[in-house]
Image 1 (cartoon, rainbow, N blue to C red):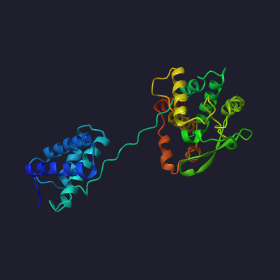
Image 2: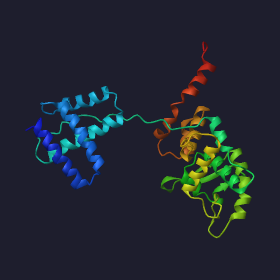
Image 3: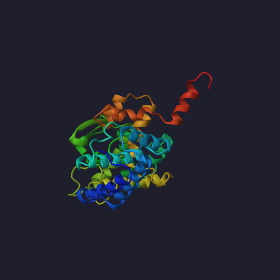
Image 4: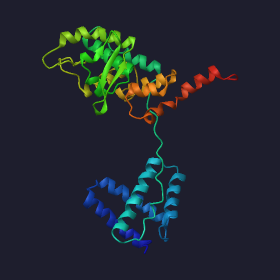
Length: 296
């Protein structure tokens, strides 16, 4: 039993109605699914669907130059439709079960150049407490590659400026020891007297405070980084705490650090997450080529 043509078109509306009723999908999502299924039925023409026709539809999407994410979404709509038909007893088989979803290419992390990073780190005005706090926070983020929550949660007992280390608490409450470089240590040493002066009953043991004496928030960290980005002349939206984390890892790998070390620094559970940094930037590739290739 296999429906085709006009019969399938009518059944798509039954499928979309079930999505609205059972899964409560937004109207925009239903509209996108309807559009995807119309394109699929147009590809089928009057033929009955089978694994070859579904695979042909996916190939046609790739040939049209669509992004893998778009192709994956369209196949998801088709897959859901055929599973609906099978579950309702309207089809004997699911022709999508043998068709693999397209692999989504993992995007390279955004990273600043070393020059842009230094401009960002040096943007705060060190002549007042807020500027010294911002400089210490930025230097800490770049030195350690920490996540925002890890910097926000840092307490004074976690910080050892004599040894140049910090104990940070990451995802799943897992702790790791990270190095704090010379520049970050100096910035923290300049900030800590201000921190002592700003401390209130709300401060607790937090290293990074807002200027009212409370522990700085995640939003506060984002604002510090964005403001520094503007002062450094970076384009809007370029500077963020996550970009500083990516930049630290990228610069270390480009400087010769091994992936296991970078994995430990960033607190990645799997080395596969860290391997994205092995795809060096085109600029670094050209620099290495020019300095190492005999005929460059």
